[in-house]
Structure formats: structure tokens, C-alpha cells
Image 1 (tube, one colour):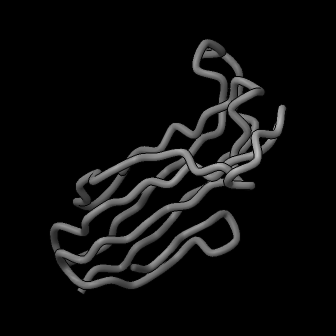
Image 2 (cartoon, rainbow, N blue to C red; image 1 turned 60 degrees about the horizontal axis):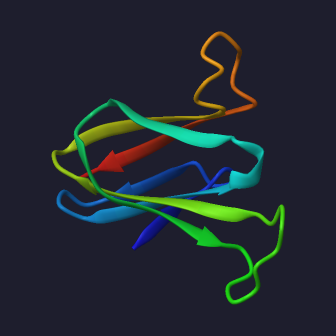
Length: 104
């Protein structure tokens, strides 16, 4: 399965193929990734939080927020991700990233 991240923001996949978006996070800060498909057609398949250090509970430790999508139609998909605290609706996100997926 092809993987997107903050450092690698563009991939090419086939119609019907699954792809994942892995974004570093830290739930103890209250920040969460708000991930939305803003162009094209992709179906959200799953979303999970993966500890950075499995088996070790670390206070303030980081995690990876993994979102898996399926590309539904040929063309271009754009995914917009904003790292923000859900209750802070009037402030700019702490991080913002855009991801581009080419589907053939």
C-alpha cells in the first residue's frame, strides 16, 4: 500500500487501490488532524492512532494518525489536512498540509 506523509505528499495509484496517510501527532496536546478529501473521489476506509513507541506508555509521547482511503475514480484526488484543537474554531491550524494523488 502506498503511503503519504508530511514529507512525501504526492503519489500515483490505480483505481480501486488503497493508500494511507500517516501524520505525526500527540494526543496529549489536544491537537488532532482534521483530514478531508477536497477534490476527486476517495472513500475513507479506516482511521487509527498508532503509538510511536508500541509497548511503552510514555506520558506526552507521540503517535501516528493513520487514515486509509480507496481511490474510486480516475483523475486527481486532493486531501487537505489541518492539525488543530477541535474546540479552537477561530484560530489558524498549527500545521497544514495538502496531498495530491494521481489515479489511473
